[in-house]
Image (cartoon, rainbow over all chains, first blue to last red):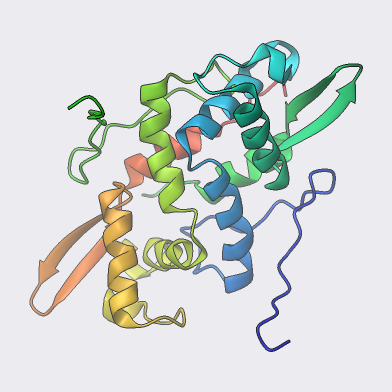
Length: 121
Length: 121
């Protein structure tokens, strides 16, 4: 498999906070693969609104039924939530009829750390 | 022009730091358009490595000649730097033969603020 690449896995229940601040040293290819995945997940306006809707919802969690207010169909909402989950940004739990989504704070913190501006800048 | 949309402009020399923390309240469509553009620009591994190379380079700036170490051609490097500039993440200045790129700290700070985790979380 000459083109096979082993990518770091970001499982939603075992998230490895990634990478030093972007301003500290050039990222390695492996670090960039991992971090770009998180940024890409937030690089869509609808996905970003949904993420924000979950993140800011009462109790820090929301089901599709709570956040269908972004002008797209419920299947589309579910699709975007799945993408956010795959990127490790949300975790989910089924309770009765609904799946509840919750922001993974360690991942948010890791992304915030990546973007930290040096005090001297 | 029924499909025309006016998108917020993020000019590299007049960057408007955007949006409250994602956890504070649901983003509006306009805020999400603006912020998603920045996240999308960092959502590519090569682009993220280049951004990190510029951000961590001596003096906080770099030309294409300094950062061709990511395994892609110089035209590709230039293309990605242009995309980062269009997203408002880098500014550039021509000096003699080379164009020098510099990270826009206010934009980094705005993205870091977006991802801020509440102290209580």
